[in-house]
Amino acid sequence: MRWQLRLRAAERGVFKAVEMRRLLAQAGLPVSTGKMSARWSTTVTPGPIRRDDLDIICRVLGRDAAPAPDPATPAGRRHRRRDVAVERQPAVPRPAGGRTRPSMPPV
Image (cartoon, rainbow, N blue to C red; front, side):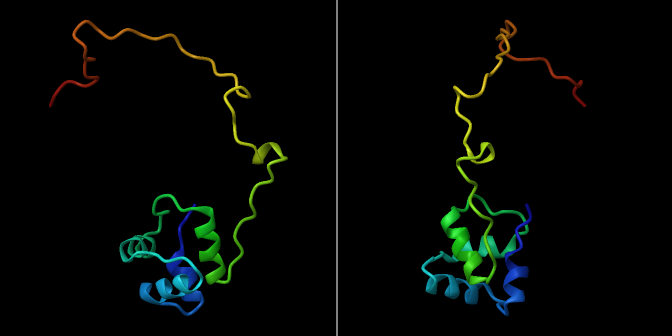
């Protein structure tokens, strides 16, 4: 997933992080200066973002957020331990020295 906050904001006529921060605050999402800077200046998702916050960002930018997955469908259900059979590998003891040998000789 690519993070395109600046591009989407520019399409709406917002060219500065301060302007975007003000719009988000008016919509009910106060964002700190540092967090806004991280979100504004990167093209990869800047850490975890709550779904509610993402919905507000999309609303401010005039974009539709992706619909929430339907919990009734298999794709919308979270995996539970009892639902998924996990085949475990047997434990391998460490060597007597406690460390493994390097795979490449030192340079």
